[in-house]
Image 1 (tube, rainbow over the protein chains, first blue to last red):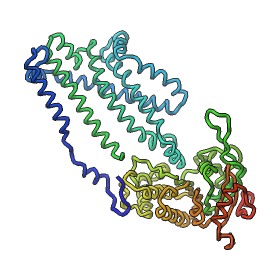
Image 2 (image 1 turned 180 degrees about the vertical axis):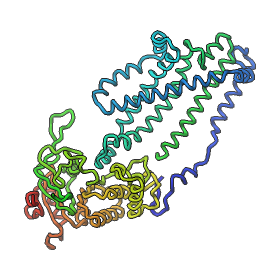
Image 3 (image 1 turned 90 degrees about the vertical axis):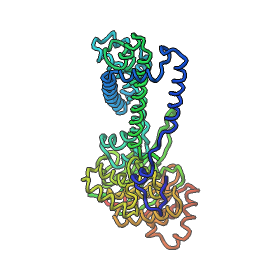
Image 4 (image 1 turned 30 degrees about the horizontal axis):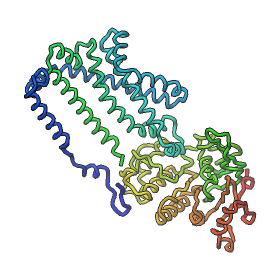
Length: 260
Length: 268
């Protein structure tokens, strides 16, 4: 929006206040239709293939909350560690061209390795289960943070850089006043990508050797041949992902409110 | 010590080497002139005559290939950090940081200078008020019109209270009315603050309206004429625009236009 020069200025607070909460009607309707279809199919198919909502809800009520919390803690810890590592390495590559030239191929190599191979390496290399899971998550997520942050840093407008340099900033000031804020959209995008990636990867990593977490819960459900439990755990995973994405979208809306 | 706003340009040459080719591109070819502290100088010339390159050298963003540029006896490139708070520039595009509100954009150079937070806010507010943007201090750049954004950029430059003020085609992209109003604001404020001001423009009217000195650049980056409007005879002022246009088209230096000041003429 462009404010005409003759019109009194609109503060950001006023503009925000005018945007009311919008009920996500399409989302709710689509999910409700899907749930109804599911229930309909469950009436004609044996429960060990497609269990009805009644069975799934009973399974949901019986799930171990501590498993959910353990998985969430693993994801959160690994994402924070991956972000610190990815951002740190991106800053090093941004500051030094040789570091970037030698580092980029290594990062590409790491990103080309399938997750299953990392899980196998983790099982072979590490004895401690938590270390295995953290290793797999970090090795998968950190390169995404690194590449997105580095691309964001390198994409900073040279015109803005020249403007700031004309005021003679220190290197730290150039980074904190220009490079980092300009990279924020790319960083938030990488958080969104990694959040969904981490939740999917952690479940697979927990399938191997863990005795807690949603992945372990899925293994137990499979061993007990409880399809309702598998669906319940899947439901929890999807709900976590949706909730996390909603939180991130809110954060993004708030942090990037300066965008047109 | 020489005046901080005094500029000496001696034998300045700037050559670029295009990536992937061995062919050098001469952007500036032997410039010699000087600017006294408090002078208002307009640099005019056709597109591609090295005006913006000259300004980048003056700001200290580019190193001269040959020759020297001194501001107050120091090189803006070699003594880069010395010019903190000494010079400020307004560019063709406003170059506001889109994630900062108007007031935070004006505060930016003051933050870099390490000014106290309260002083930053007070001074930024004062300059926004002077430029008629007091009610818009909380607006983000995308919420402002082009003219308003350029006024924020002007406030940002003036807030530093620089000795030397540089403007690179800063008003040419705006509509005529806004452009004229901003140009007047720029000149009035620069005069009131006693700044040495260099305005690079391709618009001759803009240069003549400033009423100071006009340096006419030819291709590649050389001085065709140095006209001081304050000392220029009345007879010459009439039809000056057409004369400058002819000069630029011919791309030949004109001895009829007296050199107002050369670097050698200023006291050492």
